[in-house]
Image 1 (tube, rainbow, N blue to C red):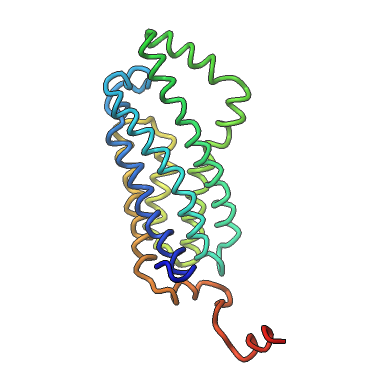
Image 2 (spheres, rainbow, N blue to C red; image 1 turned 30 degrees about the vertical axis):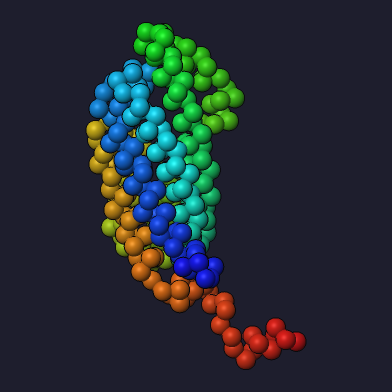
Length: 233
């Protein structure tokens, strides 16, 4: 696993494809807002411990998923490379922006603890609707993550690495799920990508280093008479 860069990349990519979506799904399950008032200043008062846990789980899910998506761009080297790299770039920017916004969670909890829901919402909007906050951290960057993940899934299907059903599940989870109102339905929309990304992850973990290397246009590390002559000239 750690004896070669190929093995490390393969294991890191495969494991993160499994772990990252799973963290997000667990976050949906433990989030008080999934089952209670959609206003976080209210729902967070129901179970502050679970509210903090879901924030941490979302944070690490959205930090790790871009790393995994960068890893799978390797499989689109021969076909779908442009689409995959556009999607990968968008995913990195978008998911990191989403992760940064989780710092508003303790603010909403504090406001809800010391104000009525209406007052808390008013104060929160005054703080976070500032142009610098909106255009620096929210718009349009929040949409880059889901859009980028979907584009990567489409590119990997075109590259014949990802089965079509996995691409469809990821599109349902990220494109459909992101526009629906957050709640119990999110268990389904953000649950199905766990299956798709998990399939990719297991596939990568089960492949050999030679199979990973075969996705390079010209496999590096293979010594031929010509390559040896070039390195010793």
